[in-house]
Length: 127
Length: 326
Image (tube, rainbow over all chains, first blue to last red; front, side, top):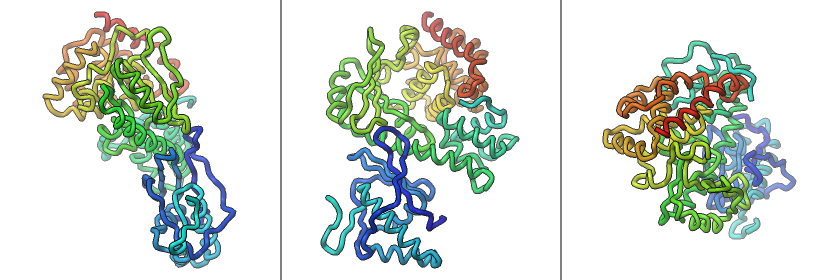
């Protein structure tokens, strides 16, 4: 793995089968929020990459190696800061970059509907 | 389309495409990194990219081949994403249509039933073979699932209906009343739902579908020949072999079956294919078909050298018609 390469997700575009890349990331997930996988996604592992498919939306999301690591750490229990810490321990000289990339990946996955962010009992993300 | 196909690339294409080829006997010449890009492109066009990614040894960590591997992964990722979407849609469709005389055929069925890893068999649509009476009801189900009828043909007597999803154009369902759509082959060979109704997902039916499909396309993709080879390997027991013989008779497909099995047996050196041929009654023109179509005609089908072999394909198509009349 080449973390911290920017985590990039792609979607299977509705007009065809070419995955399109979506950009990095205007907003940052709050560091004390808990990213939780939404139900209904089928997960397909390809080496170190992941494809997520949600049939109800007819949407496929592609996670590259870095984004796949972030996704796998989003278990509905860890807060964002904890995920950053785990990866920053693995890449201590890139801590700031890791923090930005993790937040970016989580924001992107939330926008795509694969994650929702929870803060304690409250849910901060769209229904 | 590539300009040409190097012999070494063709050797690796065939080797990697076969899911069950012995991996201790490799083609003699390893392609250069540039030729590996050609291999990837050819594999993509022939529908055997998953096999190349899995079986081409230079993709296991050799930096010089990183560009070719990355290109292969890009296309493979798209194939997988599409296959995942199509498979779920196919399951949903068949669940809703379970009371109808219809069967899912080709792509998702072959991937699950014939290949050791489903990702080795890519596909780009969902094919359904339906009894004519079931087609209006199946259309209603498709509409309810978000599809619209995009096309149907041939105009005079439709045998194929193409449905596209309103929200996801990559989702396409082809409903067919006969696997042979071409009017020019009509009457020579036919594969309708009633021929496989007793067991649409049995190995005998899968082999017959692979043979008729590949033959109707004159094996323009290596994937067609791999399907035949895998289906022949799956036809393991003698009871299935007799089911196959009965269905082949019913569809008038002995010539196409003999030609396809012979071709697959020769290209992949698979004795099982040739054993099944020997169990069938002799087919007229089978010897001519063997002369017309061989490995080169198949492997060059996605190159500009295709033109040198197009007469072979046309000849084979003519033989299908002639054999069907006898």
